[in-house]
Image 1 (cartoon, helix red, strand yellow):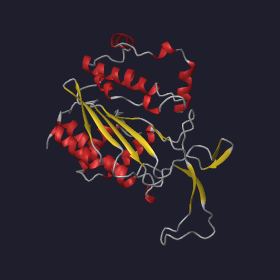
Image 2 (cartoon, one colour):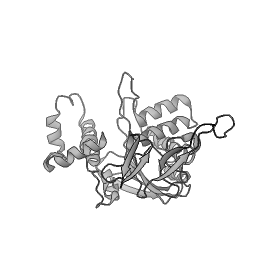
Image 3 (spheres, helix red, strand yellow):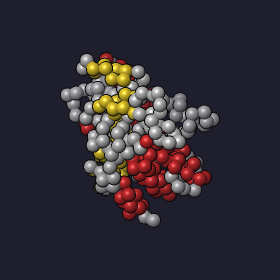
Image 4 (tube, rainbow, N blue to C red):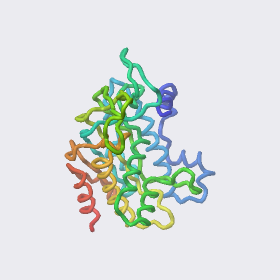
Length: 305
């Protein structure tokens, strides 16, 4: 479990969590890096020692600001050319719900049935990185695109699915989202599929949801690696244009919540803030957008076409 991992880090000496220099890391991993170029080694080092450590640093406490644990634009300096960090600050238009492992939990003496997923250090409702990945992949499958090209792009972005012979790491890195406003009790009335009327004999189901109007922040990191034998620079533009379409579908149409068919987990079209940063010629460029339609347009402006 993610939270058990964070707790383990709290109990370990701080020195063990220091980032190893490239030279130290290369010596320690000499055998498994055999046959790889210096450039490939550096990318793997960045992924393991910087992206990995960034996630380790996300140990939350109520005395700290959540924003301190999200990636920063300056972090892009350590990544390869054309790496992109996207930030979407949103307001929920429909309720968000998720299913925790337990049937209920007790918070401040109150019992909550069908509880929402919460961070175990702060008690705040949260969206896990794996949840973001699953919902965005679902939306990516719904993008209108040439089917053969779509399959290749999805594999590049999200990596191999479980059960595939060759394991491929994706180019996207996800971070959790924390809702500062607490979840509230709600109920779902079971409906007949054909008539959409209440099912006789079925009682309303109590659930916990994050209410409409609640605000959250979504961060997504794109690193154009692994490149593979058939890599071309055009893939980066193709990846990002496709990603913009998938993000729009996830946030505006399908949502990122359980019960997609009921419209749960979609956001207001007007964003509280939209930004992305891209590493270009060793410099970090910043662009802003207020709706997800603009994200694609800004990318087209940068990459052309």
